Image 1 (cartoon, rainbow, N blue to C red):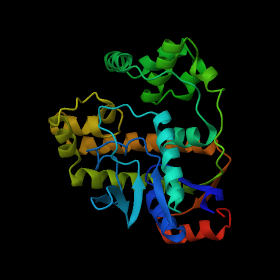
Image 2 (image 1 turned 180 degrees about the vertical axis):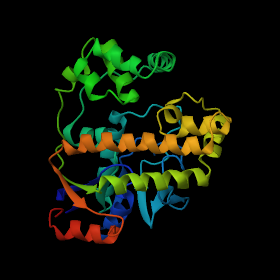
Image 3 (image 1 turned 120 degrees about the vertical axis):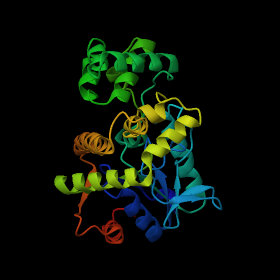
Length: 317
C-alpha cells in the first residue's frame, strides 16, 4: 500500500519551520523524515546548521518530537557531499521505509537536492577535490566575483543562474573543466524518478521570515556558535573544508573567536547572509509551479494545523 502512495515533500526557505511541520505530518500518517538539507549532513556542525531535535542513541538517528530524521550527521566536514549522493541515499531510504510500512517525507530547503531526486540527475563527472581547493583559494585571493567571471567564459547560462552561490559556481567550473561540456548542456540529459511526489511549501510574509532569521541568528550565537566552530577546527578540520567554508556563519564565527570581529558584527553578518540565502531559495522555489504553498505567519504558525491541512487536502493518498 505505502509503495503506491505519493512521497510528500515539505520545503520552503530557511527558518520557515519545515522540520516541525514534517514531524507533525509524520506523526499523523506514520512516516519518517528524509532530510534534504545540504548543511545538516555534516557532523559537529549542529548549532550553525540549526539541527532540530536531538540525537537518540537508541535509534542511532536524530529525532524530532519522537520522529526519526534520516541523512543528518552522516559525513565529516571534510567531505564534499553531492546531490548525486543525496539522491542515491534518499532512494535507498525510501525503499527501506516502505519495507517497514513507513511513509517517506522529504523535508528541507536545498532545492537542488529535491529537484535531483524528482527530476533526475545529469551524468556529471565525479568531484575533483584538488581542483575545488584551487578554485576556492582563487576566490579568496581575487574576490567573490572571480568565480562568476571565470564561469562566464565557460558556461554563461550557469554563471548567471548561480552567480551568488560560490559552491555551485565551483561545481559548474569543475564540470566544464573535467568533461569539456557545459553544465547547462549536460543537465538537459536527465531521467526523472518513477516515483510520484507531492510538494508543499511554507510561505511567510517576507518581513516576518527575515525576523525569524534574525531571532534564530541571535539564538545560535547565544548557544555558542563561535565555540562550536573553534571546536571543529580543533578536531583537525581546516577552516577551508567543505563543511565550514560553505556553511553560512562558520567563517564569521571563527573570525569572532579569533577576535577579528565583534559579536555585534558576527550577528549582523550572519543575519544578512542568511536573508540573502532565503531570497535565493524563494527565487528557486517560485519557479517550481508544482509546489502547493501553505501560508502562515508568526501569529498563526501551527505545525499540527498545517499537517492537518495537508492530510485534509486528500492529495497525499
